[in-house]
Image 1 (cartoon, rainbow, N blue to C red):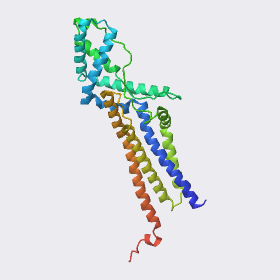
Image 2 (image 1 turned 90 degrees about the vertical axis):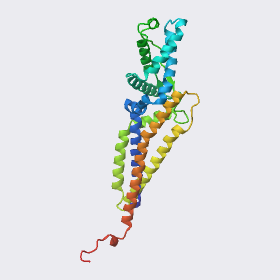
Image 3 (image 1 turned 120 degrees about the horizontal axis):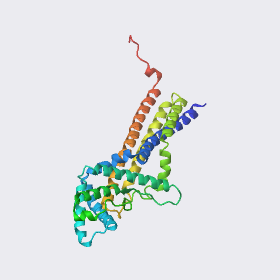
Image 4 (image 1 turned 30 degrees about the horizontal axis):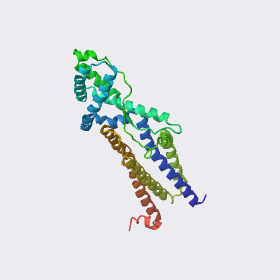
Length: 311
């Protein structure tokens, strides 16, 4: 086979190997984020001690809890004022309770499960855009338990049921919007991402085949092709992840939803930013190695000979 044809085919294999390897790295992170609880807990878990959350969450919990209690119990009008004050006090102290961390973890996991289940349903054509929703039912349950404990033995406490069973309380962040990341596109990408193991195996095979197929003189240029591909892929992925949070600001969501969205995007940029940094670093290293290797091969054989020991 002609050397030029061999090197051309080898370059194609190396480029495909880099693309497949990069896709495998990004896919592994994406699949873990959607399908397992750990990554999202790591991303949103620190919000439990965030001062902004401590300011915004009690008011929202108080509103929702008061509505559910009023709908499910016969509280006299005269007791409505004391009940509101008791609810405000209880949810205000909730964030300092030992059980708040567990309730917040349950909220994160319930939100992830809600998003994943709606993604599966929206796999068909014509489905509506799926956005991230914060399921605060576990927090409401903890808030109600704290309220009952604070009113134990009182006349007001005797008016309240042992538990409340209301509809799910979901705070919609409105992210992602269809012009940022359409649900159909996200589902297609997740299907590919869940096969990241096959992508990684294919990338290794393509890289080995490419280096073996290339000629000795052409292998440095294969390194340059692979390094350049890694640089372009890393830069493109980083720019795309940045664009997810830069456009389409929501004006209809409250400060609480905005806070959750901001923290989510900030952490996602860090999660996937590490992958793009790896791609950029490997690309630069491959370019330097390929350039040095190519320079060495272009030197005249006489220039590479060691001087005689007696010289």
